Length: 185
Ligand SMILES: [Zn+2]
Ligand SMILES: [Zn+2]
Image (cartoon, rainbow, N blue to C red; front, side):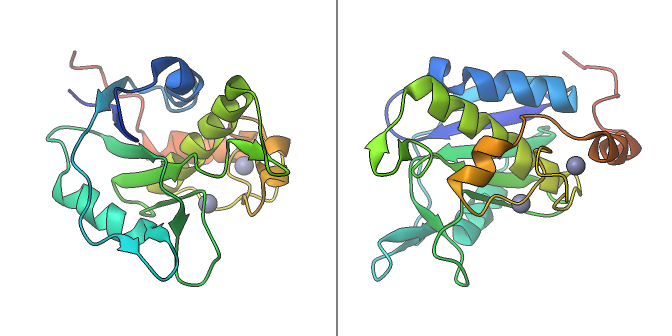
């Protein structure tokens, strides 16, 4: 099946109510079907014991090697805290103009050290999921702070944006022609 595969890689069965805002936002922004799958396999060698974090880049490589046939894009959702070497942490990473992306909710569950309501965390996750997928469609960081493609360096940035593309980014996505092909379901 073409469309976005959403892989739950966070233990147990996929938390469908937690993921529901992300599934809805991805479907409405990119006009693609979304299929949620629970994946029990985990990437080897992505954990860095010195940082006590997982390398998002190494996980992306692993996702490429396990890419589901026929999928338009693959987005993994993890509870691992992710990093890239130049940053303390990242909410996610994606291959620009590629096929794979990952988003972590490890840092989306809290505010000032305290847990926030799960539905609020789920809305944050939806924004970061749409953001990382946007990079796979070639979208770059947007100057509009309300646009989902605005850079998220902090939770404040995440909370300020909408789970949607601004008009400029919408036009850029339309140019890809993705999301317009007839569904093969
Ligand atoms: Zn980004
Ligand atoms: Zn934008």
